[in-house]
Length: 576
Image 1 (cartoon, rainbow, N blue to C red):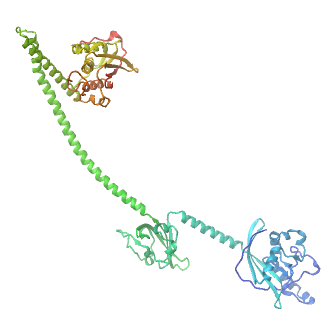
Image 2: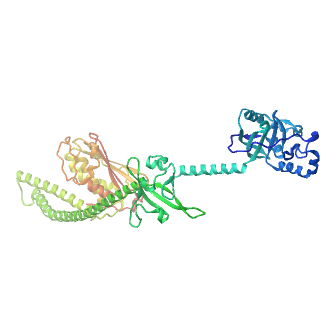
């Protein structure tokens, strides 16, 4: 079977001699062919006998030669050696018949007839490259076909097949190796270069075009240092070293190479000298190059960013030192303020208590009867002094809470008793404002883990605010419910004017008061009650939160830790 054919270059001699069929038409033993001993053609019989051994030598030699044939002008194969027999059986279907294989003279196959036509048409030598399947392997042949002449007249055709399998495989292996090499070069990030002994570029891979925006062909033949020069750094050597003299390898040196737009590209260049294997003569350099321009730019940006960050860090450290100093000053000022307020509160409470005491004695007319005008004066003095005392007490409590001087003594506490005491404290003010406190009661005697005195203070503050922000005729009450297994929530509610939602978080800030135009009386107080109450609740493991809308009243819920203790185990506390 013919695997492939093609033209083939090369020169062969025209003549192979003349031939004739074997005498008697008997088939020779070498594969059914009658070799023609062309070297002794035309010799007389007696001479042939005298030289019988000599006449057999060409036949033996021809049978060992590469496949060859000879045909007459009619296209009949009159001679085929043994090698051609094996080749023809695989290449030409007509020769696969055992009967034809034994014939001395057989018609040439169609493929050869086409070649004969080309020779008759004037081609002097038809050369082809053909492949055949022989012995289960593909064998490659170079064939040459030409005319045979006798007395300058064509008398037939001849052909010779040369097995070039090893050569073809070597060529294909070389082609595959070259293809692999090119694939590696195309896929690699590096570009490959080579110079001659004068440092003129003899090869550059396509990858260089990405860096320089120029085709590799435009660089071939140019001197290496026409493309650029090495970056000069301390200890790195000159920008244009005499590589042809030093013959030293180099690795990773930065080669500054301007591209088509004039931008300088940074190429990490590596090269080694190449020497002739036989003579040892210097042949040039080979190496690789990697475009590290973007990497360098990224490093520069990173360094710049690092410097900015370091400067910012230094500034932050300096700022932190300043802030630390300011914080210490503020803390010192806060301590001074706290100490001042605490001291002043104590200093003010003593004369205020005296004023309140003398006013109460005057109102009770302990020192004698007074007319109505003086009684009215003393009542005003008593009210103003008592109000001022409450303000001072709130300030002192706030100072003590801020400075962590408030002591909490939590124990099982009956909330019903504490709430009743708080109600009695605000009852007079509620009666004056015509506020109904009938709902300020506890349906179940809840027990919580809390400080009884501080718990009463929380309820007094919440009930006082509820009375303060409820117009006459309104109501104030208390609800209670369990909050999980570990806490109880007590809600102090009112039917007052309510609190805008944007004020819910601010009402727990010190000295903050909500301004309302809906109140029938002006607002009194310092704005510290809710702040103190929430801080006390948190110190006892609870908290306070608010729910309210303008015109819908307010609900302040106190959450305190729950205690399941026998009633008889609790001691009643006298808080007055």
